[in-house]
Length: 408
Image 1 (cartoon, rainbow, N blue to C red):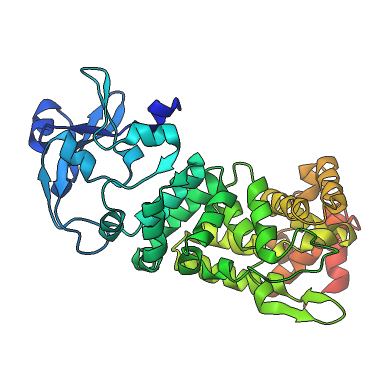
Image 2 (image 1 turned 45 degrees about the horizontal axis):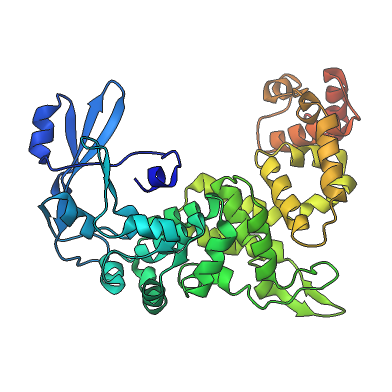
């Protein structure tokens, strides 16, 4: 309902009713429970899958996440149990009117995030609401109401008790909904960043050489990158946030401020963060690869051709290119390396970057070689020579192998 009042096309619709779950089951031929204790039924219709929730009143919250029990009631009591006033609006489809029992429409007009009722009580019920308040404030560019803000700052440590999966999902929404910088700044201002992402919080005040980073410390640099992101994938968004988390651990003062091996150290730190947040193996691997390789792009033009082709054909390379573009955009603005790589990729056909192999394992067996670990070494060497342009045909590949390795 919030999005409709704001004139925004909703991504989905929440359906609530005074019908009991049993009534919903009787009314619709195909339905099943997904949260029987909370009055939630899924109704299957030709148009799709619809979740239907009964109006309810919650019992006491004992675990900082869910009520011990619920009572089925009417829409007013249901509105009074919700988190924020802007999320407690209903649209009566029979009367075509908005039902507002908590002042949500006024808060939408004024741009205010306010809890329904006492903020401390709301946050004690579900600790994730501390982060949700920040996400809605950032995404909508709203102000958090003073009492709500005070409660968040006071109760921020409770966020540590929230499950890793729920924290992960909320953080990824913050980073990908279009207001990532504002969200991270708010997390920091209310004391939540040190609770949920201490690795990011410790970037604050870490000085950088002004010649390369006129924008300021590592944290300010990261905020600028977040500001420039456009529709990032979750992996890219996390990589942007974490790409320099190795700097606080590697800062040294020699001839100038240096961060030797911060990319490698940062990759280990990023992996630990992703594992703590229970991210998928695929996303974790991509984030780690991006962080570990974000300094290599400056070397692409000087790489051996085979190494360069292997690098640019990595599945995560387009995201790495964007990460490095944002890195430059948020610092010294030097885009020469980025443009060189873009031009190289544009002008090098895919079949040249990854050509069909000239030899395979069966070919080596036919040449008299015994299968074993050496096969990988031989085939990689053949591909390197092919990528470098020193061999182009199968016959040249055989001659290359016979010169380098004895078959007996």
